[in-house]
Image (cartoon, rainbow, N blue to C red; front, top):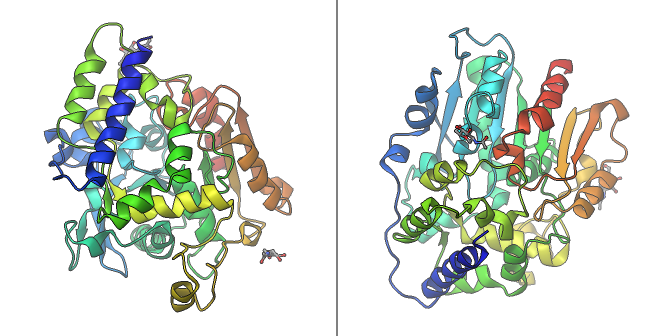
Length: 401
Ligand SMILES: *[C@@H]1O[C@H](CO)[C@@H](O)[C@H](O)[C@H]1NC(C)=O
Ligand SMILES: *[C@@H]1O[C@H](CO)[C@@H](O)[C@H](O)[C@H]1NC(C)=O
């Protein structure tokens, strides 16, 4: 299935990364005009749903964009509690609305009567503003997922709670699960949600099999880029996305394999979704965030960002090594729904088992696990059959909370 083309594309990605590392001029990012209109206008209203754009400012000054779908497609106002959907790494809220309405989780929830909120992490298109910094300032990118836990999460949860007066359900995919697990392990950080749904959970990551992620971590690629003065990680270099789109539109080329080296072989993507994907994703993140994740791949722990020397750790944390997030501290009565896949190269089954081991004292009736042998990382949010495979059980879980 045109695998040599796919390999070529991957080499192109790596070449671009390397050329940036070599200090060559960075090309301008490309964004489709659809994306520039905002997610509500380009992807939600077009499917026949009402949609509101919201913003919330974090304590450290990032202005986050949120989309709210307050009614079903037929216009019936939400009668059930709010649900916040948090995307994963190098993605944004488009994650939840890429497929047709009867296949995309955000629309399925809205049609079932939930008040649906879509969050966007700092640095993504909807959330690139700041009260005093600009994305061209290195300081703008000086954060890792620790800050998503400490600042983005509380701001998002408080915003939804203050506008709805209700406690919400939380749904995270990929990195969106890690920031939730970390936040909920520190009771003082956030008010607990009604429940948490963890799709393709990321917590322990040392068994990750993704060749791209592993080799980047083992070769300290993000660290090298950061040291050479690249603080933002953005794969949307001009020309590259266009090149991919041209190749993917050629007859006989199935670009769903494009994601395989990173996520594992997704079983159930419709080839047309790659066009939607490339129109909007991937999104930027900070190099420091990638360094933090690489540290976790190498050392197998879930700890805060390691500054790499005792004095700096001491300065930030008052101790020589970064503090751990303790998964066993998540309240035992917090209802959890955890869904993982046998073909997932980022959320490896052995790592998920470690997470489940640390949740072994969780109240038995508050932890629902779901396993699907043929699912890889993106099937959970982009799979054509995710409704039958994952969301039907997820909806039953939400109803019971
Ligand atoms: C893929 O999605 C398109 C657009 O939603 C649809 O028309 C087509 O039938 C789907 N392909 C398959 C194989 O299901
Ligand atoms: C993690 O939390 C659990 C439950 O509160 C506690 O028993 C355990 O000692 C903690 N582990 C560490 C490493 O702090």
